[in-house]
Image (cartoon, rainbow, N blue to C red):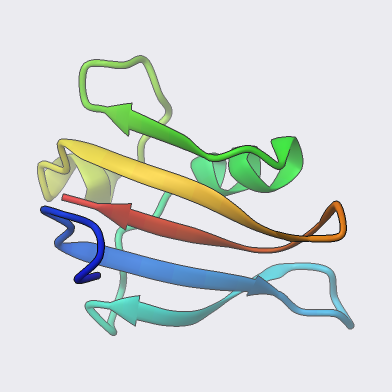
Length: 91
């Protein structure tokens, strides 16, 4: 979190090998991090990170709207062209 200027929240999701599903492994805050499954899926499937702002047309979670999240970054964690997880930060 200290490396991303202005970041207030963050989450690290890693793919669980037995199920193939992304599982939350760390977050700030620890309880109920406001993350968008739609945006996580986009980063993982496209294997490409992106930065968004609240003026873009995106499918945001209700918690993201209620917390007035203005900008965010979703980045896939890749190894040898395989997605291992996704890192999310926002402010």
